[in-house]
Image (cartoon, rainbow, N blue to C red; front, side, top):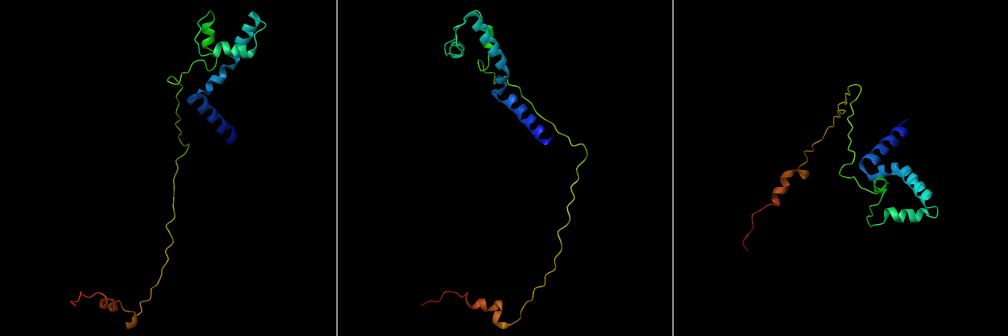
Length: 129
């Protein structure tokens, strides 16, 4: 079920935020090719694509149908925008346990050999030579 939902959400994103929605117009391309094929039986699919997707703009009798073909026009400014608002069905509460208290004992050795007072011998004012 999660896989189907993930695929569905990806498809919604692809068709809504990209130009992939143009793929839904492929049946119009086939139908238009069949119409051209009935008018001219010698036309190949490649020459049909050259006629309709050539960089030159040709306005002819079926120009309105030509503009409905896939990838003929880009509508990125008017692309379908969508958003999702997801509300949980029940309140979510997060409980965290306090960290365990660990008691450590530190032994301070009072041996004069390891006293911090021995460090004061290192820090002396400079001597004049």
